Length: 164
Image 1 (tube, rainbow, N blue to C red):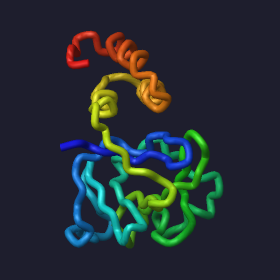
Image 2: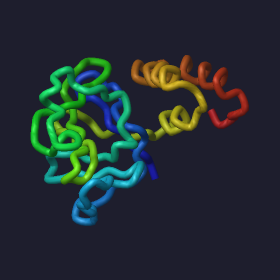
Image 3: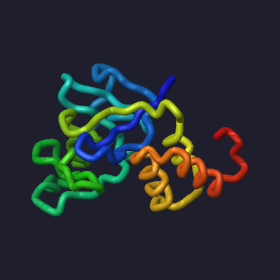
């Protein structure tokens, strides 16, 4: 099965960890103060929104406008996007963590793209025991299609992996 990840439609920056399973929204449990989805899962609602777990959020800083974080114990379901792409600052998602809702990240489908990790490069990056900054540097090489440079760096960072 080919795994997927969320990327910014504006600049191509990776916005989620690798996702391995699509779940039908009808099968999602809407418990308050609980994760909407398990780690590595995603669901799509009405061809308008894509949902992931908080654990799978990647390269998504909070919006500078603090009014977008309003809620009782965390951001509520209603409101403007409160997460932006770390690369281009495009408003791409809303994190919901209020006490009277399930907890999740909701992307607007018109701001993102769901891409396949067909070469399993992103999955390899996530498994490396390196800093987040080093992982983002490797992802940048992939973003700009610098595959040979990526493989060289991967070999330096993980010399015992012969699957490259």
